[in-house]
Length: 140
Length: 393
Ligand SMILES: Cc1cc2nc3c(=O)[nH]c(=O)nc-3n(C[C@H](O)[C@H](O)[C@H](O)COP(=O)(O)OP(=O)(O)OC[C@H]3O[C@@H](n4cnc5c(N)ncnc54)[C@H](O)[C@@H]3O)c2cc1C
Image (cartoon, rainbow over all chains, first blue to last red; front, side):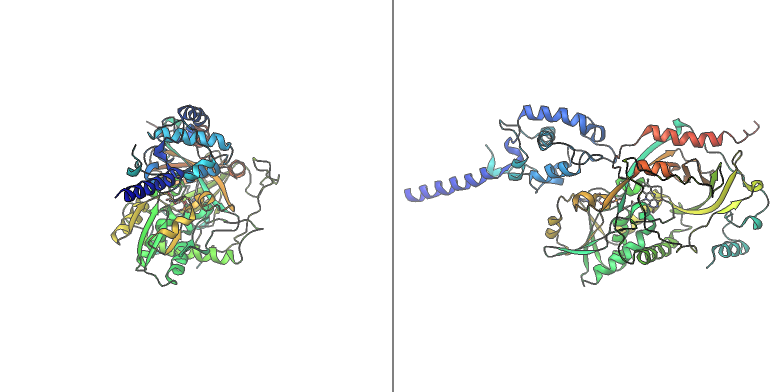
């Protein structure tokens, strides 16, 4: 009985280790200070098309709301890479990786995703899943 | 078939009243009576901005494999997507059918994607469209929308046989547009068009054009004179037949155009009536196509191929149309001082055109509507209209 329990604990611990290696956008993957910087960069570079409220226009896509199902199932790097290579539409690729990471942080915040203590980095986006809803197993 | 003969014979048979694109000699010796366009900035009710999907090699019609999925491309139709839609759809649907499947996916719901989907349904296939926008929100809906297929490649990069492929697309499309003519709501209509100039048409400036980014003007693939029988050739109007006061030179033709709302509605209705399905979805990398249940996919993303397929042969060419409140009584359009107008069911369309406009548009992916550009274009129309005598009260 005891050995069984220990084995189970070990397996759970192993499971947690892999879960930590791949985190979710729900795990507080950006900081509030970063989202604030992201807001400034967003207002300078993105808002003239996507709007100050990120709601887009009839022709320009919103960055709140439907972004959740549209990116669900990808890594956060899909959003980061798209912004890095295709945006701003009239000067694609003009912003630095750090600025783009800040903008992604601001978009996450605008979609009510929780902030945390660490900053999001360009390289870090690869290990973060874009889950449309908070993954159950990771409830804290 | 000679178009002039076609028109003459049609009139002789009493059909198509109002078509007056006849050689001057055959017309009644009176200028047409034109209703003025109410061109004021405060009648601009919409400004639409869009990117033409130019591809240096010509439209991508190639087939490639992503995992176990076969992807048949259908994008890069530059300023001629409406004109080429059915022909391009037909070519790519035939390719899809050659893989022996009855179930296909179409990516995109612009005029190319939706037409491709309808064409596949007509051919008896089961079709699911995956798209992030429906037709009214696509770039297709922000076009001018007139028949007059133009070049779709650079001279130096055009794929072999492009002229023949393009002609085939144009001719198949033309036949497919035919059943929409005369339908209620005029999904496809015709109007008189006047090219106007203050200087003789053959005295154009020969100064080499430089693009806004400093590059020399691109040299386009010449499509040649292939469509003389299905494209209206302008005829010079003698001064006594020129209806525009104060305009020295005028040419006249008759142009076919799309009323997007009606035409788009018919395409969409047919798509659903034949059992087509739409899934709203945004793809981020080509690999995602391998996970679709359909294993044959026709890819119609338009300019978005630049980013989602990383196709660097795609070049953005900006364009903008301004829309004045509809005037059904205006049954003509004109081109004058680098502005074109066309009276459509949903408004009088005004667009800045010409070499200078092109220089600003080439490699320009700024898709924000410019109110200044809109008002500038409407001003040209207003000035021309101000020359018409006001009617007595
Ligand atoms: C000002 C202007 C005037 C024009 N005038 C004419 C004219 O008079 N005659 C003419 O024939 N042509 C004209 N054109 C050109 C014509 O509009 C285009 O060639 C045509 O719209 C291209 O259609 P499309 O379906 O390929 O692209 P789009 O209309 O851009 O459609 C692309 C579709 O793919 C979807 N999509 C893209 N990427 C993704 C993705 N990653 N995931 C999911 N979905 C995706 C989009 O949501 C959309 O539904 C004009 C264009 C402009 C800008």
